[in-house]
Image 1 (cartoon, one colour):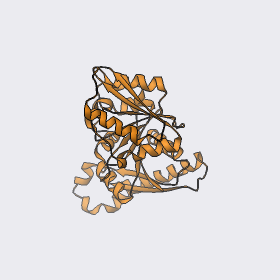
Image 2: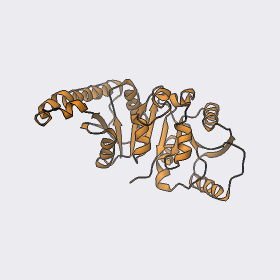
Image 3: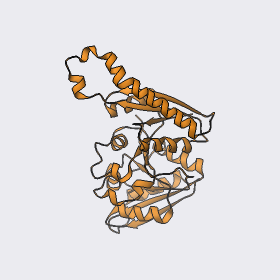
Image 4: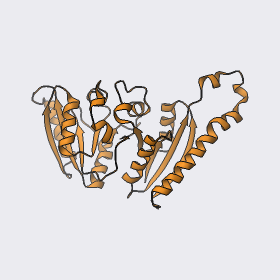
Length: 282
């Protein structure tokens, strides 16, 4: 059984991520935890009457969010046939966003976070400060970021950009392996360099380890040279009809070049292709 965390701010963007998650895990047994995080107004908290405001907090923040969560559950039941393998739980929390996500990941033994991102506008330029950007960089839990234009379709090809600078252990790669296996998909391991150079001994060793790890699954290696790594990935995604992009968060430098570059608004895969970020578990 998988435990899936679905943070929601009740926007259409977060609803699209919820829809994607339910569709994506249609054949798997899952607990879905819908979480809304209230952020109390600083002025409200710092006010002189804060000590005596528990009832007000309940009325102003908690009750409305619970009502909204019930509406989301109703919307789910209206859009999806009953699935005996799926259970839904709703939670309203009050905390700093990342602290709440981290705590719920631990308490509910979360296997994956699925949340929406508004594609280019949501990841534009400096992503730090956006909820999704903070989660995928600061929370050690596998996260699937769903752009606002992403549609749930069968996963046939997954692109895995890597510079082969580090080896990945089985624990980190397991979620990717599960997705490929469950969807009978093909993995396209993509190496992009700014200039044409041969792999060094460490890179060769790490590429061989990946080849060995995925030897029972359809996979292939692709090597591209482009001064702009994000442009190379854009071309690759379009030419291969890639359905998902996957990266490992601990490969931070390479990861940031692809996801957090300065002209992300020009990269269409940011608005259409789900982005799976693998983390080491705590």
